[in-house]
Image (tube, rainbow, N blue to C red; front, side, top):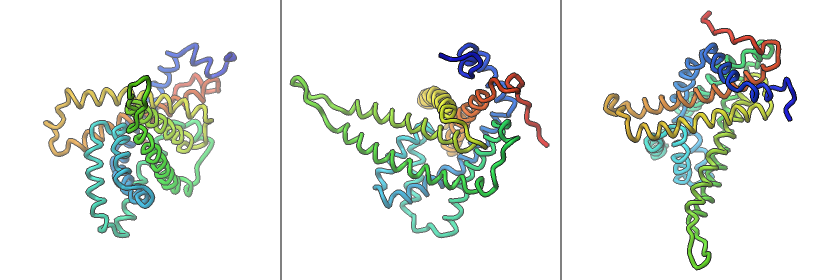
Length: 299
């Protein structure tokens, strides 16, 4: 039973007020502007990051299996454009001999840009923490590279698990004289694996990226919020691009870049909204609980 004054009790008793509070604080923090910046730098970082991860993991797992897994789960991040991204990735990997030290260092640098910008966006949303805590320059500089390593390990685990689930899908079970294929079960398990991976990555972002560290429960609250928002939006985007979109007529050869950037901006908005939910949840019952966030202004 929730005790009076507990943040969860406030949310349960005043859900609409909490939602409006989150939206108001998100607007005051210039959330859409921050999401645009995160999306832009993610677009710059995405392909170099994927190239580095695949090159590293191809020494452990078959490259074709890696690309298959990437294609499946990139569809969650950029609906309708995963094939184009995987094709570009495959083209580069087919000519990996051109990868020299200068290009390698350049890709490492660009692959970290999205994480650096995301950290700054989180600082704007968790401003109440930033006023009393600061992160050292060295930690901020090294954090993106540790997170790239973390994503690489995560992709390796997901690839191995997904391969096992696909093998299950090829099997069948004989029951009451009928043979039942397990492909449907395999598909459901792959979807659940993707959802679990999505929530896990979001939780890790909310635990690591902001200054200070929320409790695991708070991070999960933000992660589930962002995952639900993105899942709803992602299905709408898939339907829109498959039925109504005329973006290829308008942008021509730029279609893939425009659609990827658009999808990333919506995803970044959901990500930062999840962070805003955590921020406002933390402030319930504090001295500034009823004080609206002050809009960010250029200095």
